[in-house]
Length: 330
Image (cartoon, rainbow, N blue to C red; front, side, top):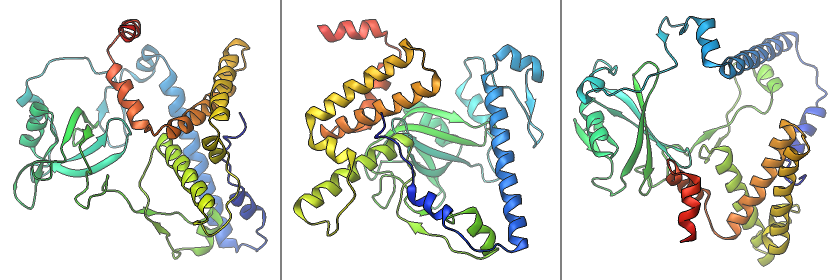
């Protein structure tokens, strides 16, 4: 399963080739920066250990709830209950203008689509109609996204944050979410400095690289990378690329159906072997990544978007796998 190893050799080379002397002040800032990152990793590790604990153990260790730095006590185990709509909406926390933040997220891709504001009536309308509804501050009125453009947000779930002052509308969008015609309102990326050393040397100055990129989940980024490799390969074939690209395993798979199918079967077998031979979690994760990658290439070959697969899976939630398979045979 070696072809799906995404390492940046350019990054390695850049790190190995530096030979300049770092000023004492910069070295101190660098050490403090690295120490901060180490502390963050340690905190993340502690959080992981806490999350893995059994609910009873976690409750016993923390007195059933824990206190955040900002002084609120929150229970992490909510009991399912029925609450009157008006009572629930009134229990949310609005600002001095009677608004809270409402963020729309694609239920299948995880993409963050847009941010707007909602008042109590907009939240009620969303929960009643299952259409993303907001409050327009410019028009001073309720606004159901799509009433004018037809680009509705079909809400599948409404999620409230721990402080009850912001919402996520998890939805299935119809058309682009942004008024510019873009799928999402986030399409500008501000890049970090190339290294920790560069940050230390630049002090308060420095520059930010700005690119036209949308935030993507790992799966969506993989899909985009595969699509890019296909486009690059086509450019090489017709000579329109203008330059010789490095050889691409993805392009090779896309050009050879027999090889592609053989690799999917091979990777599926290797994943099963991790269980049969007791090869451990790390090996299992590695082989699963290889299988997902080759499966994604096969999807691209057949013009199937990962979003379509996620929608099929979502529609099967709540259905017995045995019943679903039996229905397919009819």
